[in-house]
Every structure is written in structure tokens, then in C-alpha cells.
Image 1 (cartoon, rainbow, N blue to C red):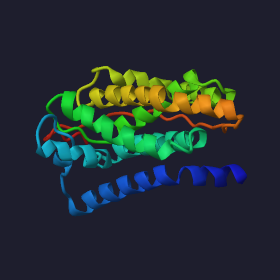
Image 2: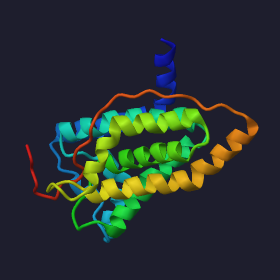
Image 3: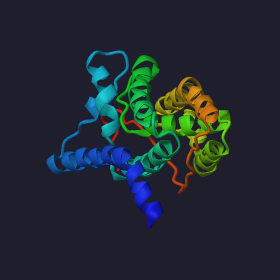
Length: 217
């Protein structure tokens, strides 16, 4: 019971993000609207709005579920191991992954939260590798074991998949771990503070963009 209560406390911000994703999807379904044009469309002014809105939009229910579960679990792991900086990291991953997709990705509408999921994975795993504390290393290793299959998604192996979102999100997470998590780990070790431990439940994510007119049922 205590573990469940702690999970709820740590996952409240990721849970709010997931709730918003579901609200957007249900509303889209109720009014029968195609809002994929609000996703990231690289190197256009209108498409830059997708940096904010793209992660909230999903192609279908399977797409939504495949991003909701890992976002909730990896987000909770982030707050469990790096609570003081977690909100900052989450916001940076959200914005920077979308920005890089806008700058570098193919010309198509990129939607979905997979870039954020890959960023969280990259940060938590890299933080564990860089950590001088056993608890943070355990968090990173657990996440790697449970979600290591995400590496399959960083290659252009399927049509309709924004592998760029995956790859760039992962890169952002790793870079943030190097510049944000590592100094914090050194400081934590010097003060003798203890980090927390984590948990895990496996789930694999799938695709992250749909070009206009691509109606996979």
C-alpha cells in the first residue's frame, strides 16, 4: 500500500500529461476531427506549433496506449530518482525533442509522445550509468532491462514511424543526463544524501507520426 501511495505521489505530473493526452484523443474522436496537422511539420512556421501540441496528439487508440503506459512509468522513475530536477528535465525533454524534430526530421506531420518517452529513457539510463550511487544505477539498469527494446525504434525500419522523434528524444535525454544529472549526483554524494529506488513494468512503444492521409485502421 505504501509503495502504491508513493507511486501515485511521484507519478502525478506524468499522470496529468497522460490524462491530457486522453482528453485530446477522446475529444478528437467525439467531434470526428483530424488534428494531425497540429503536429510538428519540420521547418515551417505553422508546423512549429507542433513542438507544443504534437506530443498530445495520437493517431489511434493503440498509439495512445503504447505511449501512455511508458510515459507514466518512466516519468514516475524520473521523479523517484531525481525528484528535485525532475520537472525541469521533463519540460526540457518535451520542448527540445520537438524542436529538434522541427529542425531535422522529414517533411511530414510528426505526432505522439514517443519523443518524450525516449527522452525519459535516455535520461534515466544515462543517469544510472554516470551515477556514483548504487540506487541511481539500479534505477538506470532496471529501466534499461525493461525498456531496452526501444532501441529498435531509432532506425527507419517501418513506414509511418517517426524514428527521428525516437532518436532525437533519446539524444536529448542522454545530453541532459550528462549536463544536469551528473553534477547533482556529485553534490548528493558529497552531502551523504540518499537517493531512492525504483520499480518497473515492461511495455514497448510503437509509432509516432502519421502523414496526412495515412489512415491505418
